[in-house]
Image: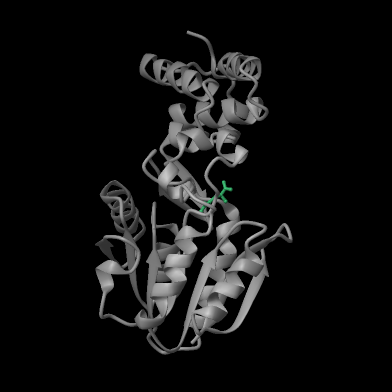
Length: 278
Ligand code: GLN
C-alpha cells in the first residue's frame, strides 16, 4: 500500500496533470479527509499507510476532483465563517464574500431586542444559520424553492444547533401576511449566458441558484417589489448582487419606496450588497 506521503505526491501529480491549479493543496485536503488526519499528522508520519477503504476513497475523490468537480462537493462540506456546513450539488458552495451580507444584517438586528428575520433562497442555510447563531434573540426563518436545498439547510441547522424555521416556496410567497424586521437574500444574479457560468466549477453548481435565466436582475426585481408588504416600518432589505449591479439595485429599491438605498463593497472592494429601509 502506498504511504500517506506517496499518496500526496501521486494525488498532486494527477490533479496537476488535470489542470487543477491548487493541485498540491487539494490533494492534501482530500488525503486528510479520507484518512481522517490533520496536516500535522501528515507531516509527522508520512510513512503511515492508508487502509484499503481509505485508499479506494482517496482514488475515487481524486478522479472526481480531476474532472473539475469542486472540492466542497467531493468532500460534501465547506467552511464558512468558522463553521463547517454540509453541501451537496443541490446547493451553492458558500462564498466568502457573502460574509458582508451577514455582518450588515447583524448590525441592524442587534439594534432590536427580538428581531424577526428571513433569508430568501437559503440554499445550504449559511446565512440563516449564521444569523441565528450570532444573534440568539432573533427569530430566524429561511425559505427556498428547492426542497432538496431545504433538507441540506435543515440538516446543517440541526448539526450546528441553530434554531431556524424553514419554509418551502417561491421567495416571499410562503410567508405571505407575515412581517419581518430584516429580509436578507443571496439570490441568483448571474445573467443568462454569462461566460463566468462555464468557469471555476460553476457548471457543477445548481444553475437555479446562480442565474435567473435573464439579465441577472430578475430575482432582485421580484424580491425588491415584494419585500415592502413583508417588512415592518423601518425594516431593512439587504441582498447580495454582482459587481456591476449596485446602481440598478439602488434604483429598484428607490422605485419600490425604500429609503436611503446604499451599496456596500466586499473585502475585495467590489460592490456586493445593496440595501435600504422602509
Ligand atoms: N458570487 C457567485 C459567483 O459569481 C454567484 C452567487 C449568486 O449568484 N448568488 O460565482
